[in-house]
Image 1: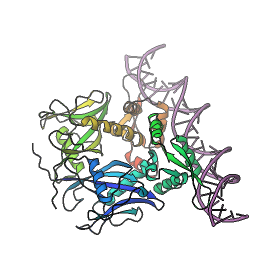
Image 2: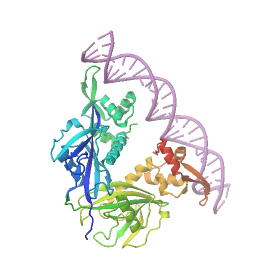
Image 3: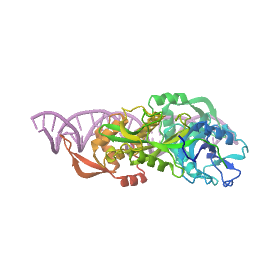
Image 4: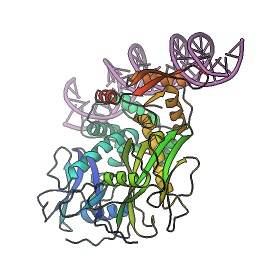
Length: 227
Length: 227
DNA sequence: ACAAAAGTGTTTTACATACACCCATGG
DNA sequence: CCATGGGTGTATGTAAAACACTTTTGT
């Protein structure tokens, strides 16, 4: 059985990072080709003997040096004219990382990798703007019904970091008291016992996310949800 | 630029139907090949000049004669050994249809198409069991935050049909009064003015789903949700 | 008149929302 | 002692959950 088909399959990674400057995406700059003045999502063609997820992880590693905390399949983009050179169907993956914990590979593979603030994006190649839009809306909705925010923060963090993260990404204000009350009531955060003092102001207790505890609670039927 | 890659890309359709016997899936029976004693999801290879969604619709039409009310991308399956003949990455689509409104194409294309009750499935080829599992859980969760149930029912229906549908698919009991109160409070159902009488018992008012109204309400910010 | 399914309202409970002052530290 | 950010409790509103009897038809 021989099938005539001339379509290539690729993967792309939309990796979000977060720090005090806000939400960022990881992009690379192709050094040549039609899109050399544009930036692009890390990604590339899938090898014959590797799974999709392995392909994204490999490309991410090769092109940016980054290893994500969290990675899931986002959506598959298959329009005819995505890439002017040939027909490419791309399976996009959506990842989260703490930028501080990952050093960007400098200028290898004829590509630069760089973080861009989400409100300060350069021109993007191909249909990568569309992909990013889908990814962003996935991030926003997922943040509300899965505890993925912690993958963007340090292992231990003051409560205010979490608040600010939610406010930044969801672009709305949150009542500090109600937010804290709700998050703590789930029971998957634990105090590290340490405190963090930044300049003036009362030092903040540090918390850490207990993933094992969360899994247990999830099994037991609790429903994570933040509005 | 020449890429060496020997992976084929296919699409599969998981189409759910619903009638008084319960929830069903549409399957086809390959008449030859390794899996001739198994059933499979409708699907096939994508053509070089067609989009993914067009490919699914075409395959569905060719293999089963069915046109869905609702169709969305589900997930992309790319494991190495999905198909023993070659490496195939398949983009799965998830559809809904009212079986009464679609006549199955009989025995064409060397394939039979048939509805199977979800609790009475035959042996499935490839990784189609996995795909079905993912689809089913998507159906269940989607039913709770999007008004897709109406795509499975007749244009006009008694309220009890909707109740039974939710109970069947979500596999739990629903309080009739609360359910009706909630659904009606959204304001996207309208009475047709007709009544339906089945054997004994009080005749039921018929309702229809006003899609335009729903879109308006959605714009205005209402949130569909059923627990 | 009785069996069968449709239709309907009220009370209770839980959770979301709104809201303002004190505390601990650095300068 | 003042500026800065951290920490906390209560009252109110709103929606979910629990719950049982009446109505209309066919037989």
